[in-house]
Length: 538
Image (cartoon, rainbow, N blue to C red; front, side, top):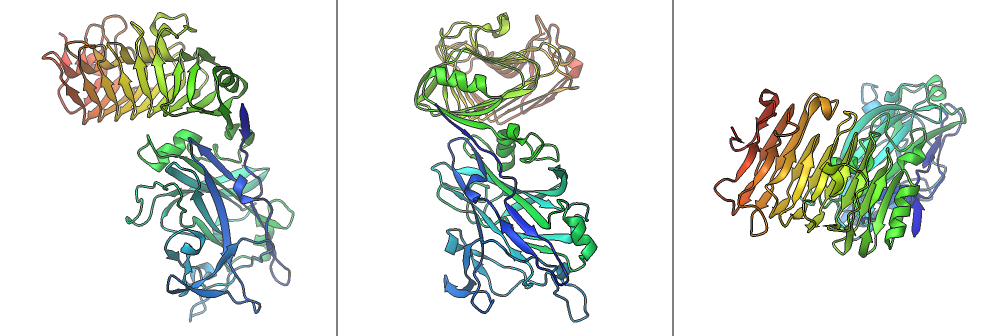
């Protein structure tokens, strides 16, 4: 079993501060290639460049792509950073002193990117061109997270530039190692509607820069410089890390990256206290024993499966975040159960799951006993591009249940359920099912079994059921439902059901996309936002 711990490097770019007669420097202390995180079978490299300088101190230019361009080189140490000083004809600072845009561009093709970009006129705007290269074989979504040291100063004193092919989100002020930083998130969104404008970075390609230049406002005083130096060590720190997740199975970059690494907030970012828990341990495994050990030994783990068969029958402790990546040639069988109310997430990407007699129930509850994936309490299961091959009689692919009204969530996208007359999904809480195919299901694609005071702290469960195909055949029922509200034993209440673009193929006369079993269902608490009228049993 190969095991890697991917950690942020605390100081990626360090700039010593000074004004009025003293020197100021940027200091690059650590290799950039360790400052990346990936989920799925993807690989990225983070690159950092600056403009090359001639012997006389001027910036070097060459004709690149038939255009006069500044020449780039790898970022080097000991670069001065001083307040910018460009002013207009009336003596007023231009862009806080950074000036207008330089007429000479930087052709990014020279570093295997594409197109070109401009820089500020001011020579005191320091270069820090950060690009992300997809070095793997899988298309990816990428983002870069930057933390700018502000100490006790006003963050408006620090200016940055970035390319419009990135969306910049200003997250807010965070504390890192007892010092204040302004946190920025750059999400790659593609290239001007011309190339991969859906935000996907294809394998083998490199982005435009996100963070490009950094400058200090012309308004900065000696007092401001001291305030910015929150570490008290004469340096101005900029921390940079890039993240990537495979694009397949996700609709957009923000959704994919948040699913893999969490939403970037002032409380969730690579440099939070205990940051080692933020960075997952990445493990490559080749057999069932190694898979079980990887999950048992780590609280936050990404498991990459080699092709082959794996028997699971694993009980996940509370609070774990487990991601299992594989291919259709990596086959899981048995049960994975999360049986604690402590929040955690189980994510499966691109694997095949056999729902067969290999399942050994670890829950002792009839509703989840014959489930390949069983989740309880405040747990989430995410499946992207997973194929479920079902043969065990009276089984369920995914079941969520309740114990202490914390609330479960199921997110299933671009999956195939070969049901053979068995149950695909039974749920008590929030559910999102999109772009999936259900072949020969038992009666329904999704059954909602309970909600509200017994199932979650939320006022309502949100159910999203979009662009799915339900196919009935000789191994399924003569009729089928897309979503069924259970009403006989538990009753279903307090749900918002959203649905569109769903299709039933070869359905009998009694088939319906949305069916309410009535009985104990509290009808007045159900909100239907769906494409066809629900059918009621009564």
